[in-house]
Length: 274
Image (spheres, rainbow, N blue to C red):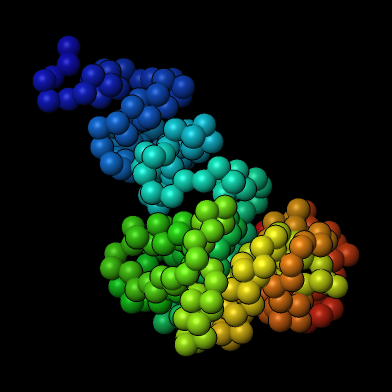
């Protein structure tokens, strides 16, 4: 029997263990009643591990039924939503997560950190260590709406959101206004994504305005970190962002073309394989 102050799905969950598919239906239904659900609360409610809940949220996000945020999920209709961006975010998901985790370890307390747009850069924001998320431990500058959404869940974050022309397919702000704001800033480290990276062409992207912002970001930071999964290594994209010599660190996965990795190392770039 359900109690008057609880939704029917809540009472059913507490009555007996449920299979993963049924649990996911409950989770999706819960977002009809509340703006946000957390991994910790769901794990306690269903009596399963955080890993199981995160897997559930990934499956539901892939189905377009919710959107994952730091520590939990919100309804798919809330905030940014774009089929092109979400489709790219699902590509090489595990590799991008490993790359983001490895790249995030390069951030130090007190750093001014620039985070470019792109799905792999968003994974860097996701994996920034807990102590760096509190107060003004670091300062973040970004033109990426998914990154802003991620950082919004931190405890009193210090973040500068760049303005400009909105590109829905990139979930980013670009253009002269963005570039002008960047030129007034200096940073310790910048993380830049790309759709291609070769020794000859450097980092590339499909959009000229995205390239312009990325190049300006690189010029304003003392250390430039490129993050790209192995499918991008050895690929020539449309518009160059920066040449290979402008990069200090490349973080990719262990499926990257060995020849391109060797060329990067010969150029003096620190290559981190995850």
